Amino acid sequence: MNQAGDGGRPAELRALAQEIYMAGVKAVDPADAVRRALRIKNDRLEILLSPGEGDSEIRCGNWQAVRPIAIGKAAIAMARAAGELLPDRLFQGDGVIVTNHENAASTAETPGFELIGAGHPLPDESGLRAGRRVMEIAGQAGEDELVLVLVSGGGSALVPAPVPPITLGEKIAATDLLLASGADIVQMNCVRKHLSLLKGGGLARYAAPAALHALILSDVIGDDLSAIASGPTVPDATSYAEAIGILKDGGVWDRVPESVKHHLDQGREGRIEETPKPGDAIFQQTGATLVGSNGLSLAATETQAQKLGFETHVVSEALCGEAQAAAELMLDHALAVEPGAGRPLALLAGGETTVTLRGDGRGGRNQEMALAFAMRAADRGLKGRWAFLSGGTDGRDGPTDAAGGLVDPGSMARISAAGGNATALLGNNDSYQALAYAGDLLKPGATGTNVADLQVLLLEPGRSH
Image (cartoon, rainbow, N blue to C red; front, side, top):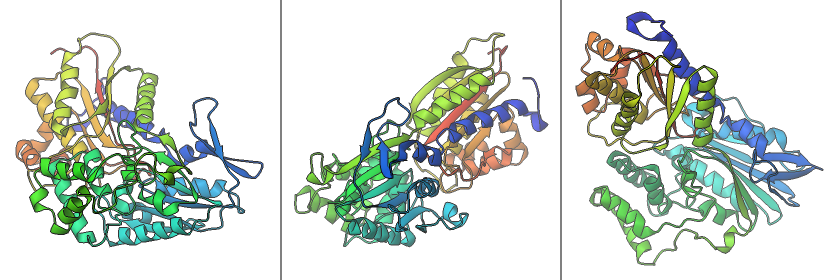
C-alpha cells in the first residue's frame, strides 16, 4: 500500500478507509432491519423480538388493522419496507413518516403514508405539525389494532410536541442552550422528555388501549431504549428533578425560558404528572424490538477491514466525551503500536462524542475529531502513511453537508497552503472550513440510516516513531 495521490495523499488508504466506513453504514440498512423483524404467516403479522439471534421469540395478535408511524432519519426506508410487507387487510393507508427536511425533499411519494419533513437538530414548525399528526394517528387506534412505531435516530428533535404553555420557540431555546453546553444525548433526552407530550413514554400513553410495538434502530451507545429518540414508546425512569440538575450542571438553568423553568419546577414539586414509569398499566400492551445499532455497524467495519487484509483492533465500542479528547485517544493507540513489517493495521471505534461550543464556526463532532487528530498527529510525530476517518452513519455531521472528515499526513500542509490557520479554526469550532481547505470533508450524502458514528484509522506497516 504505497500508492500516493496528489498533494502527498496516501490515496489507497483513504479509499480503503471510506470502503470500511461504508460497510458499517450498509450493515444497518433500515429497510433490511425491518424485513428481518416482520413477517406474515397465515395472513397474520408476526413480530420477531430478537431477529438474527436464532429462534427468536415472536409477538403476534388478532389485530384488525396496523397503523404505522415512522419517526427519524431512517424513517422513509423503514416505512417503505413495512408498507410493502403488510397485507392490504391490515394496512389501509393511514400511516405517517416524519424525517429531516433533506431526506423528505429527495424522496418520492410513499404509498399509504403522509410524508412530513421536519427540522433537525433543532425542531421547527413542521415538526410541531408532525407531532400533532402522530398523536392523532395513535389516539385514533382501536383496542383491536396495532400501532407499529418505526423509530430511528433524530426522532427526538423531529417531533417536538412541547407541553403547553411552553412554545416551540421556548423549547428550541432550551435545546439550543443544552447543545452548546456539551450535554450528551442521554442528558439531552432527559430534559426533552419532561418538556414533551410524546417523549418519555408519551406516545404509548396516546396509543393506549391499542397494542403498540416499536422497531428501533438505535443511535444511542449501549442501546438504552428509553434514550433512543427520547423513548416515546417505553417507560421513563428519569425525573423532573434530574432534568433540572442537568440544566444547572450545564450552567444554563438561569438562561432557559421562564416557562421551561416553571414547568420543571412544578413537576419536581409533584404538581404536574410525571412521565410514565416502569410498571405503568399503559405498557401492558406494548413491546419493542431492537433492529440495528452502532455495535452491529462497528462489527461490520471490522469484518470488512479483515477482508481487505488489515489486522484489526477495536479501540472502543463506546467512544464518547469531547471529540478532541477522543482524537487523542485514537492517536495514543496509534503511537503505541509496535512498528514492524506485518499486515497493515486498522484501529476502529464506534460511539458518539460531544463538542463544547467556544466559537461561532461551522462543523460537527466528527469534523472536529478529524481535524484534531490531524493536528495532534503532526505535533506528536505519527510517522509513515496513515488515514483517519470519523463520520456519522447518517451522512450528516452537525448543521453541515458533510458526514465528518478524512485526514492524512498531508492535511496540515494543505490547510496552510490554502491560507488557513488550523489552530485558530479549531479554536473557533470551524472544523468545516479547515477540512474544506484540505479537501478532507467526508461527503457520502444522506445514507438513510443513523446509528451514531464510526472511526477508522488505517496504518501501514514498517513505520518508525
